[in-house]
Image 1 (cartoon, rainbow, N blue to C red):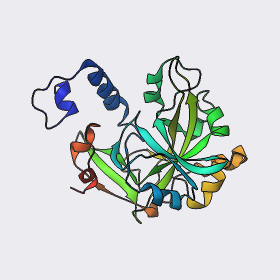
Image 2 (image 1 turned 180 degrees about the vertical axis):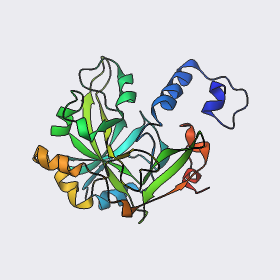
Image 3 (image 1 turned 30 degrees about the vertical axis):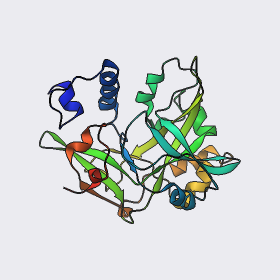
Image 4 (image 1 turned 90 degrees about the horizontal axis):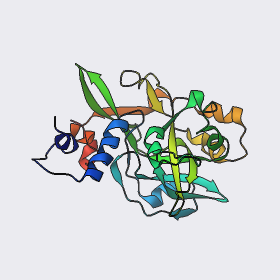
Amino acid sequence: MAFEDACDSNAEKKVYPESYRTEVAYYILFSQTMCGRFVRKTDLREAAKFFSASLIETDLGESYNIAPKQPVVVVMEEGKRKLVSMRWGLIPPWSNDPNIGYKMINARAETILEKASFKNAFKHRRCLIVADGFYEWREEDAKKVPVYIFLKDKGPFGMAGIYETWKPATGEAIKTCSIITTAANEFMKPIHHRMPVIVWREDEDAWLNPQTDEKSLLQILKPLDASLMDCHDVSPAVNSPTHDAKDLINPV
């Protein structure tokens, strides 16, 4: 399949700028990893109430196909609990290459304290990444079938995240984040062997509290109860990160 067709399933012959082609190539390469795409559709005011945030410092709207390097809504504790925007794909403060963020959209719970890029953020800079569901691709007859995974109550949830502040050679500093993943629960195993850490409601305060000890933090990084989850197959239109529409989460 031609590159242009892979980027746009409805495309006829189009000519894309080289910068666009490079950007989408990164999306395709890294965004179908676990967890590589997700959905945020809850209104910011509702999200603030749900996560007990007193401040909203972002104006991001809903998105049905969030991919690496795009802005995400994050719950963080910084004096007060607030909703802010961060770029998805953690860039370590010492890095000179912002594209490293594509490779660091996820951090494995099992090795997070062993990785230089993640361990300090895990100890000191934790957050919740707001989502309403996420996508995974199930292997079926040598094909990859996109699946939308969500909670049975259809409500929002917070994925365990870590963040850093990266300062480019020129321009303003940016906050970037990574989603922590863990082994799949029984619900997820037929779909994928990994899943994002969905923080239990009763653990959210401890996760955001900068004083929580490492042992307690590691105990939070466990698979969600499988009985709380649901899913359905969705259109392959979600395969392209250039598509972002409400109907992407409709069952097929």
